[in-house]
Length: 278
Image (cartoon, rainbow, N blue to C red):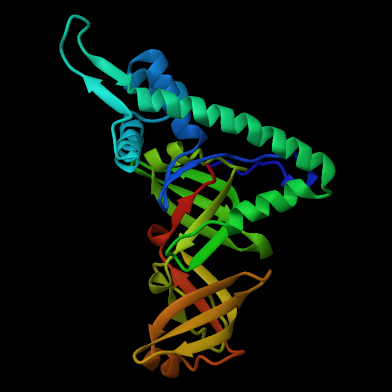
């Protein structure tokens, strides 16, 4: 496990941004997927292309299948047999897509450079706009920096440092760690569905709770919204973050959850989904 990493608060800010294509509400591809397409076109091999862009073979084909499905037509086709022994090639649609992406990316870079020079604090604001624009069905979304990656025999344990001194631990596969580029110091976000969060109340001594759930975030109840059967309870954490849980009305009454009371939100590391900006 590595713990040394650069403090981002002491690093000079640089302007950054990304371009991606969408098919309806689904993301067809960003820079990494377009790079994969370009590598396939250059090498004629999914294996060589995956290595060139730092993806696993399975991850590369999963990305190709997703792009083919979302485009509504093949972008990559696998050739079998023949004098050359088969291979992988791009369709004319994929070639045009790469050209369009590169043209849009050039214009996007010029826009960022002009905006960065004209608007004070643009780099920081632009990054935040990108983060708050993420749409997902998971109620709880946290943004942080990877503080540790511990390799296991099958899965990896990834720790994400949040504002306010909190930390979230996730268990993901080796392939996910590599595909997402999760290394110490990289930025990532964690998604936790409200139904995966369990609420507890500490005893009078305030001793740490003994649970199999790795993540335990202590906070103050901000609101309790009751429904016919269940209630939505939101806890305010140190540093300003909010985590929400869905529990039964009976649990709300049993635990004495009211605005201003203290509770602990617990959830398993395997219940945390990690993501990164493309």
